[in-house]
Amino acid sequence: MVHIIGIVISSFLASLLFTKKGKSVADFILGLWLIVIAFHLVCYYLLVSGIYLDFPYFLGMEIPLPLVHSPFFYLYVATLTNQRSRKLHWSIHFIPVSMAFLLLSGFLILPFEQKIVVYQNHGFGYEDLVSAIQIPIIPSGIIYISFSLLLLKRHHINIQRQFSYSEKINLDWLVYLTIGMIVIWISIIFGNDISTFFLVDLFVLFIGYFGVKQVGIFNNQLITINTDTIEAENIEEMSDPETKNPDDNEKVKYQKTPISDELMLKIHKELSLLMLTERLFKEPELNLSEVAKRLNIHSNTLSQVINSMEQRNFYDYINDFRVKEFQRIVILPENNKYTLLSLAFEVGFNSKTSFNRNFKKATGLSPTQFCQQEKIQLSNRI
Image (cartoon, rainbow, N blue to C red; front, side):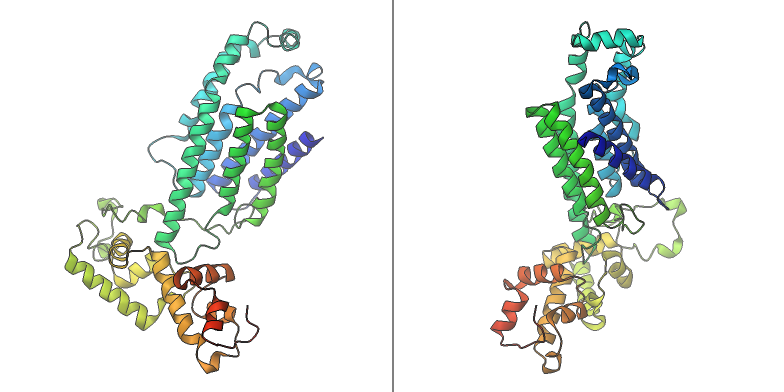
């Protein structure tokens, strides 16, 4: 029964993705993967229930399918975090599973009666072939999961380099999916088919639950990150010189050349002045590109200046301003009528969680502990 639920839910989620307005490449990859998962569950259910005797059409199709799930997951992570390789075509990831199906083609074209006999005799005559196909399954899973974890780590770094906030773009849901994939592969290595496919059913439920909660998965609100602008260590031109707008020359005047100490000091001084005079940190969704544009420099250059002069990333740099501004305004008597959260929103934070986390990181105290220490009385303290 649980396998039928998994089949129905994975098919339903795939239909949601394929009918989604403005669907992205990541949506298409996830939808296609969910269809493959549903098909794999169908094949397994036919086998364990004995129904394959009446529906022998798919016998043998399930054998290479474990080789396809990890590549799909990796491509989904890479696409959703905007880190897909521009040099390698996506199809290269499916060469192993294609070769496996090619090796099985002799069995797949057998008459249904012969297929059934082979299965009833536990794969007699095809043992070596099946064993050969199964050899790369575990290494493939380990490799793709490892690379997916690296992509998630890079994504987290990219967020902190480019944004002053992480809500809506942290993609915690991918972390949860990765954990789910790791659990399934542990079962594949140390468990059996019963535990593995039960976990696959739970994984599908997991995708449905967290996919609905994660902004942008089954709707159109996901914010993407441009990973082309975060490598501050490689100050080089990103666009084609022949198609570049001449008006942009000034904006990227420091992009190709190493930044001298004198120039770095100059940019840092201009940045500090901009923050103090225009108080850009109060913009909840402030990002690196916006600040760089105000300074008329490339975002890579600004990232390098902040990293070198402040010894921290853009995320921490901006949120430190917000914490200090909060500490300044919270002691003002006219603000006693406000709550901690309303003052946090005033200085640029866009969530209670972000405010508490960054305040504790900067001061070592929670906002409430700070108010108690300073003997500050606010309305409805949180």
